[in-house]
Length: 430
Image 1: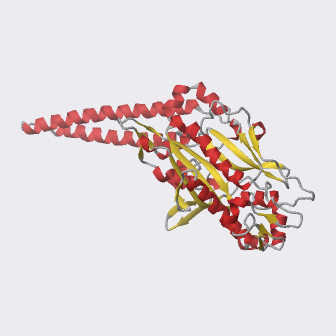
Image 2: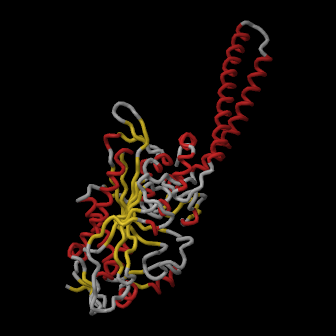
Image 3: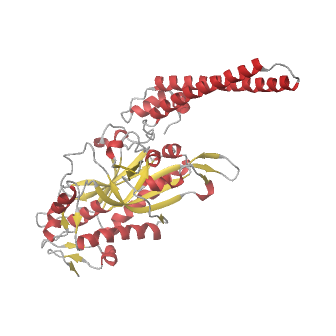
């Protein structure tokens, strides 16, 4: 979230920065609300000062045995006036906050210009997309032929955009999650958490999903409580320190969790409806880092390397792109996407986004820092996928498929699966 004073001070600079990502900032409305609110604050302060003086005069008059009735009436009037002004101020505060909560983060100056993903800039590629002596199948045909993926029964249970894995497929999912968590905790220094999948409104607001993207979330109303199913573990992991002041010397913090994720995918119908690339429920290993603002870009590069390591260890071909300003997520100031090669689509598809959010989320969630000499400030937050299980599984099946319909398991994953191949009939193989 932005600070109103900062937006006003930046003026046209703020307008131009947000225009890069396609957002039209209504600065006059913000200025009007901010000015009116400040005038009310001053009026209330003046009345409180007068009220304090009147109270002293009441005390003097009473002590002297004089008539203090007029002074007491004035004190009552002042109290009523302050209460009325506070109510008006609260309305303006709410109106201003409601606007500020819907304004996206500024794009970093070095974010590529452009209104859509077409303007994303490729940074590098790793690995060579596999070539086949046969017509490669997509992950759906492979998974269903082997009996490890069942979309029809999932639809019977829950409707479209759900999936069931079975046998070696379910083992492969679990193995991928364990492999990623082990990699991040043992090699990359992350602390693993097990977090709730249901969180309150304040928590989802802290990371920027609310209020603007409520239609993308699954919401529950039980026992007079509004709770939201998390769209990613970024939400609970980042908000672990909401409302807290962190010692600056304790930073950076590096957290990871494997959770189910729930997304309504509002507005995405017709895209990736086949298979497990875009589901209402999926699981993902998430990475979150909290650091000093001046360190956030270095931390982003580190996080990107940690996500890339997952794909390198699995031997999967991928590329890294920097997102254009118009393609950035709401809370991000700079984002790298990692795109994995999908042979069935003959292209690279997103498998991870690693984002530097600067102090944007920290201001919303009130995550602050304090140095040893007492200086306070806002923390910076970063998040990234490290990695989603379903999309990784799809890429693994497609890139490692064999002519006989079997799939080879990457060597690094074998200790976690217990087998080196999934045969064409779905059974584990050596």
